[in-house]
Figure 1 (cartoon, rainbow, N blue to C red):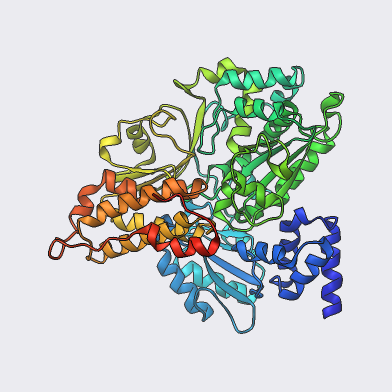
Figure 2: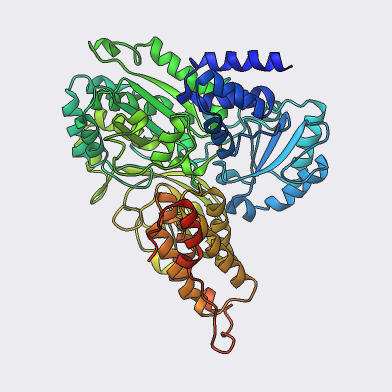
Length: 605
């Protein structure tokens, strides 16, 4: 077996030219072959790629989908996102557990089945949902969970589940997808979810100089659709202007923000448009290589996407001298993720593409200066690239005339939670929250989560506000909560998510989020005191200011924005302080020993 293991791993490594920067592909392939990446396998991978053993082990230990200990041949990952909790996932969990005879985090004695929890898998519009190997299973009930286990025991082949429960709409029914996922497109717009001519933007782009293409994108005032809202044309200008002959285009398809699923629809129904936008980006900045970083949860789309890429190569839309443009060489590869929310942050995504743990990088230098492989890199979102293709076809003026003020174009919104019509909606920027609530069939609404848990909770006093960068900015996630929901509990569950997903690199995020979570649990248990509010606010602001990357800089938002906008909910459950005294926690003092051991100083003041 040892000889066989060695040969198989050497073959896998050779498939990726023994390139240690392709470590993600290598360890994923080993995991798929053996159910885990054993210590022996780690040694062999390190030898073949000329890497240190600890480098390989650090990758395997970082990502949720990877494991040194073998998992079952069938892995059931049940989503425990807040929306899934609202839709009854706990009862579904009990059904899976009882039918399999194991608890969560366990594998059956015959090594066939592993049962795990997973954070948001991009299916909040059809929750409760689970990922069974690479097969999405949606709209789960307790009966359906039991049926699934019984069907798998008769034939442990997860793809049969899609045909058993019916295929979804559009390309979900494509022979290379065969998924029960529904697109749930509830409102189409004039930019993305409409009929679009094939590659019209690319054909017009190559009639311009790269500088003219960038100028067109700048004139459209397109801002990044992933959440940060940085001007796309400016990012491309910086990248093109950076020194070095080799540059890269990266597409962030790691849609991990809880409540977000609009990129899933674009990848399913507008993949050609996304790849067209990436190709235009390659032409504009002078890149020959593009990478689509696809979250591990969307692996079911990979064969379909690879087929589209191959068809584009055959049509001379990728490759050398694209569409007869002499010297324009560009191609795209897909890099799979492996279950890590932090990789949605652009420098963490770059680390993962380089075959490393998904740790964020220090900035400066910024990716347009030194990104992937320390070369100038532009990282843009799926929706951003799709919009670029439309801008080059229809013109900057057309795009800039849509929307509101500095927020041009349309925005795809993933809407879920307490509403009758969850799904994907394309609105021009400037749509009023009240209009949105009417369209989705939301009643008795208490709160909206705008932009996912890293965004903000708003209440009824904000329902006249609009979705745009200057008012309510969002990467696309909107979750609705009715008046029966406990907003403190909702905030605590999202904090639990951030505790789990923090990379652990910096002390404020690693320690501070745990403390916020514990304080919220204390309040929920009826032990909260008025001084806990000030404690949470101070601690939350400390974490935001002291954290290294976007995760820690936004992770306290569930606590901070519910305190700000739903203070009465907190006040109703707080009890008077005992003897006017409330213990306080000195975060700087608490981490001083750890700082000394690590040989570094925090920025906590």
